[in-house]
Image 1 (cartoon, rainbow, N blue to C red):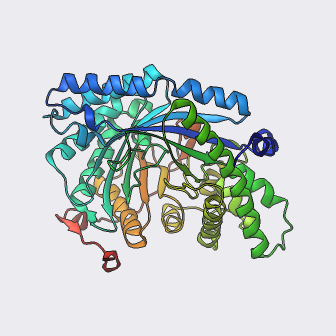
Image 2: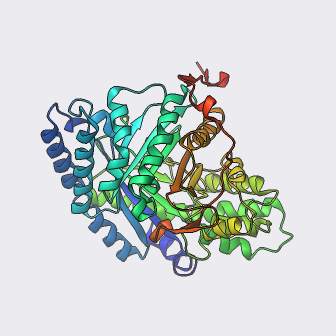
Image 3: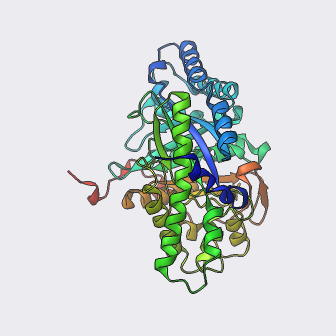
Length: 455
């Protein structure tokens, strides 16, 4: 049983070490909102979201005040919209209308973001899926709080290379349509492999079709807490003590999230879903996954040993967290976004960290290539090749991987781009410019790996 004394025990973590609950995310099924009439579907969606989520923000704020736990974001995830809009959307403009409706509903209930402008196309694309995907650039350009995701592969189905190729074009078009804001639309767009149905984090959150009508999922975060305890260990601490320290810290962090999740569930009268254990950094000094890696013994993130150190960290976070909550899900690991982590930015500027090294790190961490700014003149096929590489890592290793990459129009290697807020800032990183277009332009899908056959 969790009680308030467990939260009081973490006061130092909150006040000095940047511990927070990163998000309370309400998942909402919109399956019953579908109709053959676009206006009616828009109205159904708006009514359901503004009814179920009307108290989400105020409830989060009340819990934060009463328990003294910062709750940074309140968000909504919805059923992948390509499913909901399949009967009423006959053009990309129709999907843009649904996007505007979602943005309006998010604004009215006061959430930071709403995720689920999504399509799951790991094996093939329906006409509705393709319409939604092609509408993404305009949808991202005309909304503020909407996030989009496309799942292009899975261990069970392989990788849909037609979708991968299309997403290279879509990302570049999104960058172009939001270039007045340093191509910010791409920061709200992610391409995934093995996307989970219960992820509370943006931009990849959507409410899977296997979920109930509404659910509360919570994402906790505490890189600063882990860094604090590790930097107080002697330099010659052995691996056993190091791992135990991380596990115990992850346990305490997760208990706070569990309390918040249960309390939000009770007050909103919505079932509790999962706790996502992910260590999600912010641009704040000290709230950095890269700094944890330095505490483990690296001069900079990207040095030899980085992948091993990250694997250790990710595993111990999971082991500590699963002992603190009966329901762990989502992504649950360590995020390595460049623009949102000051330590990662420092490593890039020092020449220690490249896209290729980040790709290697994604083999063992929670997600993938995240919030990476690249030159605006990067070819669409190059972006598709990067997506294919990352999807292959996820497919073969039976894990979630993702690409949230931002070709910043008008910027070149060495420039700096400011996104603001939790999105931070980033140096423009070089990409490998050797051509992959013949590979990317092959039609069809890459088959599932042999070890996907489990039956």
